[in-house]
Amino acid sequence: MDVLYFAWVRERIGIPKETVETSAATVNELVAELRQREERYEVAFSDLSSLRVAVDQTLTDFDASLSGAREVAFFPPMTGG
Image (cartoon, rainbow, N blue to C red):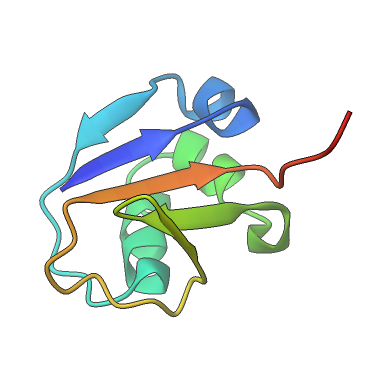
């Protein structure tokens, strides 16, 4: 599955996108797997309340199922301006 990182998430991890082999059933499980990879992932995902997630381009929550998902994107909350 493709995992995309935007804004400061991308800056902390150091890449905009990667393909991940995962057995995670939910976004939370995917985040747990990513956090175990390296310290940069741990830092990026240290406060999930400051992140939003989309599965296959649909905004969702971290309990969302990854069954059949092809893409997960992580980004900070949107602000107006």
